[in-house]
Length: 551
Image (cartoon, rainbow, N blue to C red; front, side):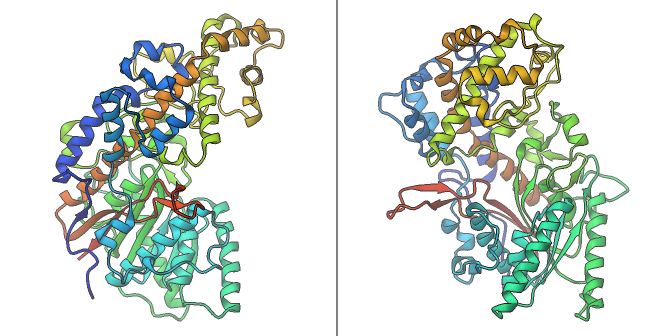
């Protein structure tokens, strides 16, 4: 049986000679432009960011450009000859520094035997998938099936599976025995109904491939810092080991051939949230720590996401308490340190901070196909900044201060908290997300926000003249915020690439009998209707897969 990976694999951008050199380049670029990643839109006006921050004064020329020009900068890196050389250099570097994201150009998947190049999902299996999900599942399911076949894996555990879109493709189209695991009973109930519908359609058309799909509700738990020395193995290892044993026993009880102690499993996760991705790599893969891992896990395939809820070593932020009490969509409990993982970054003492990790979740290339939505996002940021200026200037007319902002929506976001800015953060009133109708005009927005804050109906703050005066005084800030937000979003590729290469480097550093690959495995963009393919949109901004294969 031909091995899928003959050695560790990573595809670097042009000009990068080694992964270590690439990590250094990314770290330097991120540090050089930290004034962008630390930008906090809510305080743009109150802190006079445009004039007082380290934002280069010569880059202010972008405020005179059209909205369409800003969208072109974000989506394709389009520049103008008359712009300052430093600005043009930054835009070019930001668009070229990230990991290559085109799976068609990845040598790892160049083998024509890899069926994802040839095969589309059957219509019965695509039921309920939107366009983005269809692109993701079609590519990743076929790649996983190819890896499973070359690695001798017949069983798959899909962690954080939701309604089982990926699981159903693996089971019904590729004939694998799949356990669909999620911490949400509601999600799994929807997946079971969907699975029953698919089975009826496949039976009717005589298209069953012999695969099997089982749904399991389970909240995964792990130690405070997974993968660190301890007498006890992480809870997640015990849970998954027991799940595999139960699944194999069930297979035998059903009259199927029961797998032996040497059974081979492929464990996967599409868009595993926050710390779940590094925890899978630290705790599940045998030999990546001082724990035994899951011996049956011959292959792990992981596509991560939600870097803003990733726990970072030695970084205190406003999400700390949020992590301790929050269950993610993947059913994850407690906290494990997810960044940095590699020795090379730990030795450097590199820290990103919550704001930078939130930037990593951006997808600026998606702005161009959705100009109306992009403008609405800019407007919401502007409205919230003006509201903060009003609140700061009229504190005596407000109710007692509430909790700091924790919304992760476009209205406001959490940020790192240090002892130096606690007093400043006390003025961040928690407006949270408001309905879309509130953003029809400044008057409607301020009225809705004051209602949310419990401001008295007869307060002078409700005088329309106050709102009008503030919006007129700070009118220029709308474009200025859009400029900074655009350039900030360009940092996303660099920060996400740093996080991903750190995970790959960690696996390589283990020097065990495993091979690790980091490669684009899901279509990053797709044609959106034009005959010449010039009108393209991002199909899946989180499309980089970490693949670990045992020898």
